[in-house]
Length: 219
Figure: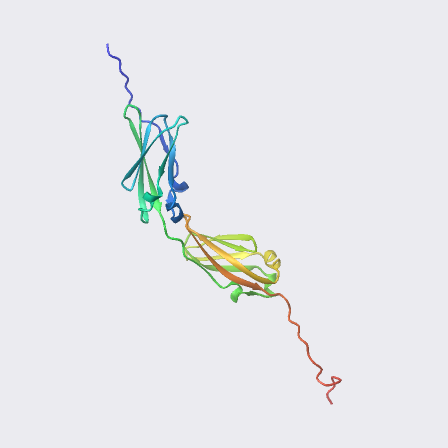
């Protein structure tokens, strides 16, 4: 008598988001990429990307992690790649998950218009909201830091962005020179930083008029 076991069930396999958002940016390309998920203890996991295969084993906790070295990531040009993850159990049953990884290595463009029209804030303007605007990559997030406070907006479909610093914050600026740090972050996480100056001068000028005559009387 011969006893044998029939196992035709496909093994459990889950795949976490790659690089947190299934996008690889310029900074992430220079780091080790950890691909992770869950499966059944002892099963063998393989990850295929750009013609290379990396392997690992599901641990006793049911999780698995496989590292892809930065040297391999540097071979990736911009575009979309299939990441194929397969798990094989002890009897050879296989489960496969395919995920698309978008590689975006280009920092977003961003410009900022001269603040307040001339880069100066006078007494009258200091009591009003301050509009900061510029151009950028559609969908990018714009952050403007002024006097240790951050204001954010998103670039519109027309490539324009605008945000408003409330008058309460503007009124709190003392006379002096400030730098607005403007950061653009695209959907992949690439960033571009630019700056623009702002000088606050709210002191009202003093005008002295000399006497027209000795007694200010004109005969």
